[in-house]
Image (cartoon, rainbow, N blue to C red; front, side, top):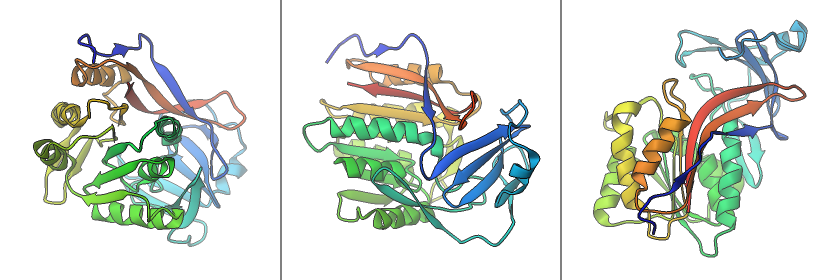
Length: 300
């Protein structure tokens, strides 16, 4: 271990998701984005799209589903051309998962995270031994399954019983039910604190905390107030030979630079390197990209 701590990149990076067979950003502009999720084309609000759409209005009007926001957060409702199926199969790499029209404008996964999935897949496949990995705020489990398919033993934690149920469905759809994945319904802070008391250690940790949330017993999560303590616990949970720690956040007032500073404090005394920046969706056939979230990641 280095006493000086990890080296922090002196400039931000941009991790771009360019789309794949089951997802594409088809167009964007006028505060909206037009996307394809497998069989469905979808229009969702995106205030960052200040430019004009490239495609004609008819292409937007032909979308299968449109989300009408009720406020500036995630609430609202969907409008459909025809009644959609409750869930439909999608995939990325070896992993299969179900798309769903949720009540919070997203479709049960976040496509911009594919850039992180690719990094994690490569990182884990490059390790000699099976790493033990913790995924906090794991949601519907796509990242957990990408890591399991790459050879990791994964502990997946989320406070939502429904989300963990969907994650289990995705594991079955992917043919990964026999892989070493533990599915835990619990508040992330409580679980991390208990693991630290037990002396548990992990070779990699990823976490994608929301700006605000509630645990299964009514625990309240506030990103700016609670993230520093949770990161301290994550520092305790990393093994001496840990390989990575990936932190992602969607809050408007956060930045990759802020996340990198917190990560550097968490990993004081370790070597390695911290990269930080933004996750973006790249529009098909256009010089346009939409910044979606911020990240900081450490690699030993």
